[in-house]
Length: 139
Length: 404
Image (cartoon, one colour):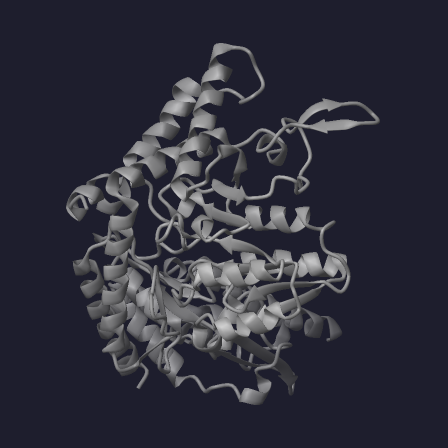
């Protein structure tokens, strides 16, 4: 399944959940299922700037695939990051570099994230994409 | 006090719906809502009274100037300043602190000390830190153990005879209220000037700072029912040079010499926000009608109620335990991020602040990086506080259940 196709399933899920309460529950549960990042990896270098309560992303390339881990102190944000990592983990650099995220803006999540968190999310995506672009450039 | 139901009718925004619910606005430490009389003032100013002040001989300019100076008199009377010449209009607290710190550059020398308390918000912290960086003075942060002001720590700092100390009248984080009279007496005894930041204090004890003999006092209009971009700086000593230069603050200018206008105009370079100043005067008059002391006592009842209800929620830790809490109560929630809690409250129409409250050193001192803050104002009701506590309990319960 392509990133876009997988992303469609999340968008579909979120659109099926008619009210904010169910959407929150969905996101919090997704976030709860996501593994926590090792404390030693929550460094300043891995921190996404501008996010008050902390949000971290690590990316590396392994056997030609992207390996992405993310974490946040906030449960809702962890839910968003859980979708992000589920979409991008194990993808190739070129697949990742050409992906345009839709699951935040095209669903209720967009309206529910504060401006600050939305910026944090976009910074995380940018960080992953620029890493992917530099990897794709090497190939 | 006038019944709160009647006061609420004066604030159009309070009948708005947020996310389908009645707005419960409990973020008044960040900004207060604006009554209809202030909105009408703004509309009327721009519809019928707009002109530059102190500039023209034409009728409209005279009217605008008179309204602007009347607002200054109102503000002076409100804080207990004997002479309006000591009252300078600013764009707010941040502007006032920056202006003052900058104007003291020549008065501070290398080796001098400038002190602030650990509880200061960034606006009353960073400009003083910069003053030290520019002048080579020593920047001292007075510890506030447990989020409260410590007279003992303060006296220890006074041993180095600081040129100036900056202290908030009410902490925007813990709601603690330093003893201004004692502070200013002790400081003046060693020749230290005191800058009192009244951003949070103005609604709670409007005349305390000047009565206690503060050298400087400032507040923001938007924390006392006026529009954003307005504020007041009171300066006891008018020999301080102006920080900003420009039109409207000089009597004569040649290439060689400048004669400054008398105070307060010498401290108001450029075209002032006269519409805002007039609106601030209107807001203060509105407060006078309500009764500032009665309003402050009512606000205290609300914030004490909030603190008591929060103390009963097992997962909640209240930051600081001030004896005389004013304005706000901040707290953390066990194993939950303030952001998640506030998002759940927002869905019910409840507006609270989350984050570091622009007071990172103070938060760090209390062992937190982020907190939720509830700050009621005179138009809030005990029912709103009860509703918020109930919704908070339910949000914590839901989030815990979902993340179990």
